[in-house]
Amino acid sequence: ALKTVKLADEKARRRNPAVARALARVHFVMGDAKAAAEAQRRAISLAKSTPGMEGAIKDLTHQLTEYEEASATSSTKPE
Image 1 (spheres, rainbow, N blue to C red):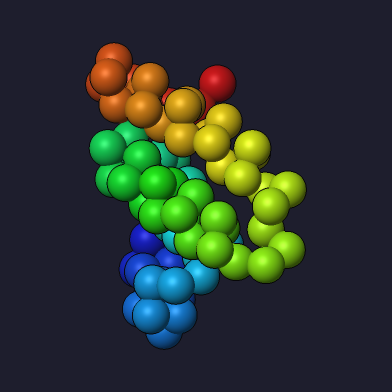
Image 2: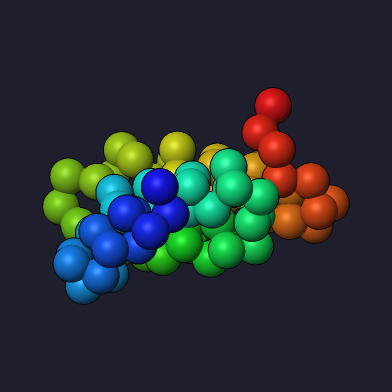
């Protein structure tokens, strides 16, 4: 899954907030909360400059908090 979403991110030239969000989730599920938070921050930044994504920013921010908390505690398993 990680290889596939990384390829999608490359094909989107790292400019698609939905792909960045998917990359963040895959990193998180695979146990890398730090990489998840980094990808999620990029997703938020991209969403802020993408028309029609305004409604997703709150959800993206909530997920970022989850990833950052998991990174701080080294526990990356979702509840």
